[in-house]
Image (cartoon, rainbow, N blue to C red; front, top):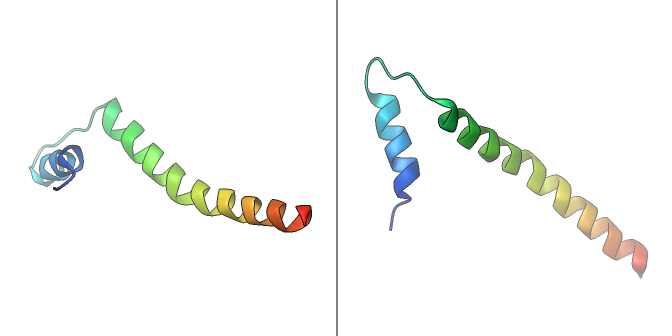
Length: 53
């Protein structure tokens, strides 16, 4: 099952004259934040587990 909100954003971005609203920028800020934040979180989690042993 495809991710419908993402598909809607991508379909809207393909049309000419597309002017994204604030929700578009918030969505991409969350995506970029997750891509950057997830590896940092995982590295810290692994380091903490190693230090406890």
